[in-house]
Length: 84
Image (cartoon, rainbow, N blue to C red; front, side):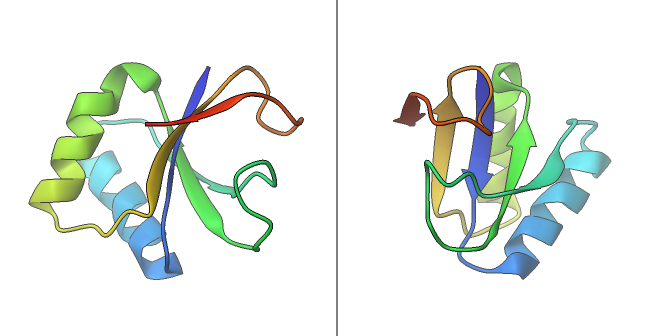
């Protein structure tokens, strides 16, 4: 399973990745999978086990999130998704 967070603007994705680095949460910017949105945008992937820390970080740093999503297996292929 892969966990992603999506954003309405690119600057929030960049802020999220930088904040995660400072908190030692491994996160990386990735394209938004087509199974989530047809728009061209950025998301950040993070370890699903860090979900609580990621949500807390976004709240503390006032990072505007569009959605938290968990995808089954390889998100580059069409598959199951769960918005969390």
